[in-house]
Amino acid sequence: MSRRTKVSASVLDCDLADLARETLRAVKGGADRVHLDVMDGHFVPNITFGPTVIKALRPTTKRLFDAHLMISEPGRYLDQFIGAGCDSITFHVEVEEPIEPTLLKIRKAGRLAGLAIKPATPLSALAPYADLLDIVMVMTVEPGFGGQKFMLDAATKIGPAHDVFHDRDGERPSAREVHVDGGVSRSSAAVCGTGGAEVLVVGSVLWKKGNDIERVIKEIKSLADQARKTSAQAAVTAR
Ligand code: DX5
Ligand code: ZN
Image (cartoon, rainbow, N blue to C red; front, side, top):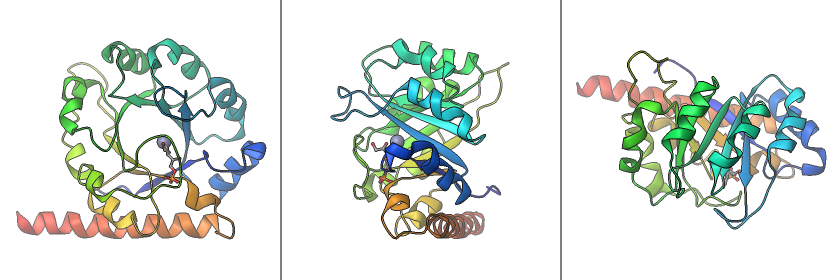
């Protein structure tokens, strides 16, 4: 638990007419990674962008690209997201198609493989895929839109999500990252830190008029780090 909390900037609500410049603003402001929300208007009631846009944005920065696929058929489009240069590909455990082949393919391509869970989905849904996961993405809003309120109930899964990972013999060990996505701000950062989240997805609060991106990221990281440290210390004392 020595690593610092990382921020993945979600560009969903930035000025999309200026996507490359907005991405750079977030990176220069301290975002460690870029979170790309892909929506198909079917799995969620909203449509965003796809692999061609991600590919076009790829040369903008060397920072990791985290693709968050909110689409019904991730397997069908996977090659395109791999080809677009995504470093991690996370899709939803709630999709109604086989999950294991897609996770295997992501890992075979040398990318981090992740599953996201909606607020009402229990962590037990991830158990069958435990040895193929690098990322568990705990959704703290209903997927589909930025700017929603952080759901405290869903956040109770952040800590226990760390127990899901299980390494497969003879394969590269899991990256074991828990990402929290939805409604992350200065007021919810501590809850995420207490759960020991490795990566916080931060969206709309970065782009709100008048907000200083660098300051927002710095404060979120420091609040999460502080809470993470305190809860780790408490766990040691309780032993
Ligand atoms: C919601 C997306 C989130 C969103 C987060 O479906 O998955 O990544 O961009 O935005 P905020 O931080 O505004 O909740
Ligand atoms: Zn997302």
